[in-house]
Length: 174
Image 1 (cartoon, rainbow, N blue to C red):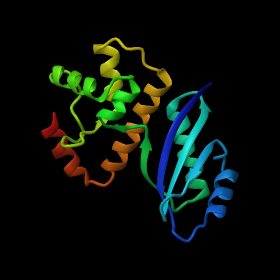
Image 2 (image 1 turned 30 degrees about the horizontal axis):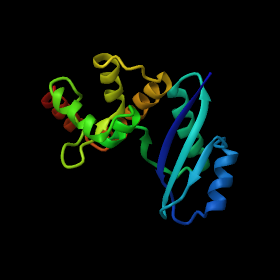
Image 3 (image 1 turned 90 degrees about the vertical axis):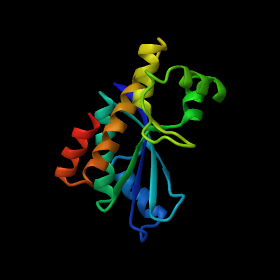
């Protein structure tokens, strides 16, 4: 069994107070999470869950939250989206060195999910690039969690589109 660290963010009913949420979550098996309620109607849970795989850890945590708060809707699973600063910190680079690395490897570095003043990448793709192109040792648990988080977020977004649009976009993106 491995410990997997990840974050799940949910939209929850405004009417639930912190004590009620914490009690429900604890009873449902989320005693391995730090609970954050910084914004009304939002719930962030930082898990450190032991499981046989990241997929099992994340899906069981999602199921526990849904059992505790059936109305909860997943906003985001993480770690997933990262910017230049996040990547630089992860690999102990300066932000400037990370930018230089990006510029010198435009042909092979993963395409950003969003490009602009603050570009964003899927962490799983960035980790894989560093492993294969820079021969960096990557923590396997982090790599696994990043992959499952990305899959959860992509699945969540995909469910919002009609099937015919998904097929049309798949054909264009290939």
